[in-house]
Image 1: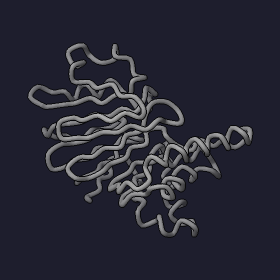
Image 2 (image 1 turned 120 degrees about the vertical axis):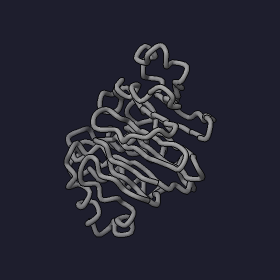
Image 3 (image 1 turned 90 degrees about the horizontal axis):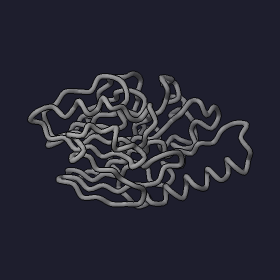
Image 4 (image 1 turned 45 degrees about the vertical axis):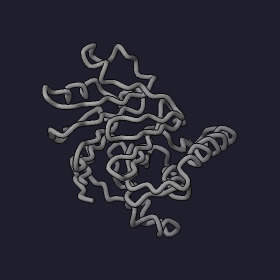
Length: 229
């Protein structure tokens, strides 16, 4: 497969028979005539843009899988039959794809997808949103909620995952990624939600206690970067 980092939390995955587009909001989308599944984890402007509907070009098969917090009115009327609005803790069967959803610790959902014999996880804004200066009870509550959600991934053999690594969290930037590796992990983990600060990737990988995770964390450095897996 070929994985392209578009921008922020936006990734494009090209498989043998289809393509997956996750949380696009800006940047250049790779061109392909293969059937396309477009995922949007929630309504925030850095995870969803109506520009994705332009991918429904004549003669191309496109499915839109949108979190239910995205208003249906944002979908062009002629494309609404091609849109599936999903809620947390549900499973869905699409042509060539099986989908389960988790509940975000912010808004919307996270996606667990089975396609072409591989399993993909895109977290959306499901992360351990711990902030310096926030009350301890609030941060403790967040850690518990995030870890409880990750229990749904335990025992899953995930091939490719897309997980936040947010530098705005300062000393706690690594918590969401760390807890993900501890609960489930994946063969290839792509960091996202970095707001253009890609220094957090080598910072995480160079942490001695994360030595076993480092080989699995992909070296994302710039938009448009392509990885052949």
